[in-house]
Image 1 (cartoon, helix red, strand yellow):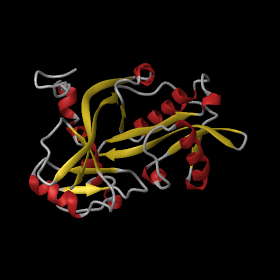
Image 2 (image 1 turned 45 degrees about the horizontal axis):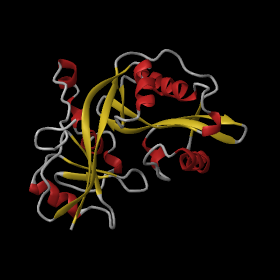
Image 3 (image 1 turned 120 degrees about the horizontal axis):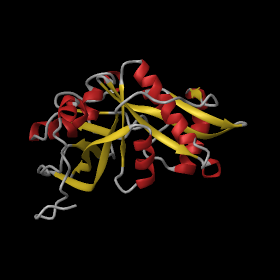
Image 4 (image 1 turned 30 degrees about the vertical axis):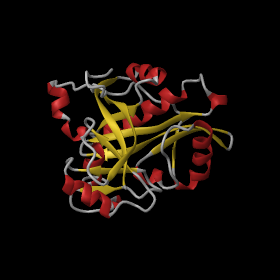
Length: 243
């Protein structure tokens, strides 16, 4: 969907529920200045995750001062991947490499059970997790991504065939991510079972689960709706770097 100017017309759901969850309008910033501050690189109006943990950066506001702070500590040879409420003007001295919209979905109630076959994973399982990521390509996932939260998986013998985990953690909220199933193990309900397991853990801990999904991933969106997620709003991911 585009506006008359040719730019994407982004969705803003100005409901009381959406307004109450305002930390999710800038989730990476609120993670790195909140529950994930121990992972944060940077100062002032910008923060970054170490790139072997997550490829994301954040600014508090779209100002020249924030972009100056963003540039100061941007890891070498890396772009800043920003989750922003809308497309924002490109500052002088920066170039845009890519942009794309993401739906942000928030769980509206408790989970309805989990799979007893699911087990919690640890860094000892990282080789198996990286093998599954290579086979399924669920999105950004690095060798230290599991440090961000809990991961649950399903094994067939000594092979990990499905997993889901926690990534961003903003005050009162936890993002579910890396939900993936090996092609040879699909159709068994593993993605739903693992998502329910993590939803249950989140609600038990007093946190609201949320996630991000590309709007053309209709199968995943349908699954998340069945599990109790609702579309809260659309964000835009901006890939930018200093010239």
